[in-house]
Amino acid sequence: MRDVTTAQPLDVQPTPLALLLLGREADPRSERGVECPGDLPSPSDPDLVERARAAKEKLGDKVFVLGHHYQRDEVIQFADVTGDSFKLARDAAARPEAEYIVFCGVHFMAESADILTTDDQKVVLPDLAAGCSMADMATAEQVAECWDVLTEAGIAEQVVPVSYMNSSADIKAFTGKHGGTICTSSNAKRALDWAFEQGEKVLFLPDQHLGRNTAVREMGMTLEDCVLYNPHKPNGGLTVEELRNAKMILWRGHCSVHGRFSLDSVEDVRARIPGVNVLVHPECKHEVVAAADYVGSTEYIIKTLEAAPAGSKWAIGTELNLVRRVAAAHPDKEVVFLDKTVCFCSTMNRIDLPHLVWALESLAEGKLVNRIEVDKDTESFAKLALERMLALP
Image 1 (cartoon, rainbow, N blue to C red):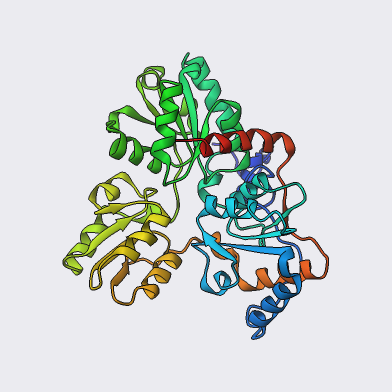
Image 2: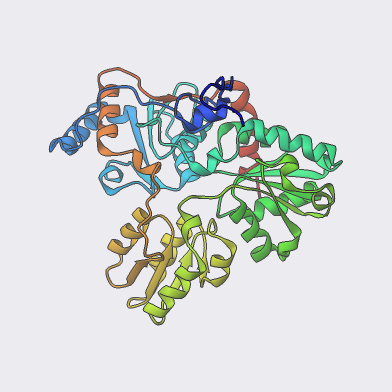
């Protein structure tokens, strides 16, 4: 028997991934692992609202504040415009007179705004730690390795990448460089129609659920036409034959909020609220989408509630801040959260009032903080992919 009391310690060096998971390193090509410098005001400061208002007034037309639908109310009240990620990026590009674009959203959204705005404009993210778990699930290195797998399988020339807006600038650049386009949850079918005119197969990044739901629900494909590429397994966990037979190669990524909704959630709410309409986002799992009455983007959800008759009942499967906001806007309708478990977008909620106040006051004092700047090479290819989306019929 080996004497474990005298055994020499193993010379094991932790891998970069292990260090990242332990919080001891940062990955500059990931949404996570970043710090937010600066002294933030206390969250209990009773003057936060007035301080934010005063700083914004001092900046005047020099600042343009964007607020994503999933932001908390205390932040959204200072937004000049609200919307989903792509709408906000386009709104920023339409305001070239604004020197500062303060993006109350997450990192990939601020990157898109930087790509679409002028070189003279500076995009600021109040908290650099506001990332996106879905965007984190596809890194540039992983996607490059996936393309090598497709090349070795002899199908890369047949594959057109389509990347969801909820992806990093690196992934958008990869998509542009390889002849692909970007999509949103509202134009995913148009993007896929275009892609299948260019090639025989699609690599859909990084949200498997939006890709699968669009292909099966809207384009007449079968679940068998879709395969799931897992970047953490050799060859994505797929055989060459599976890759060659597939029409949709789905990346193994998902939204941590929408992925929580289950078929049980739908069945439970129908049992509790007779006559309820179930309305969900297409980032939800396929079985949830199949069991829902209505499926659509954030903007679709808002417009559907606006058009709904008084007295109607709705269970909504999307981020809780938005559900609460639309419920408050429609007191004549019964609006509930689809799941019994409260679920905010934790990274989106990192943009709180103290961070916003700190960012605005810093800008008002002439100090540029937390600028999001995409390098020119990445920007050029990412913009190419975005422009292809803008040109979709």
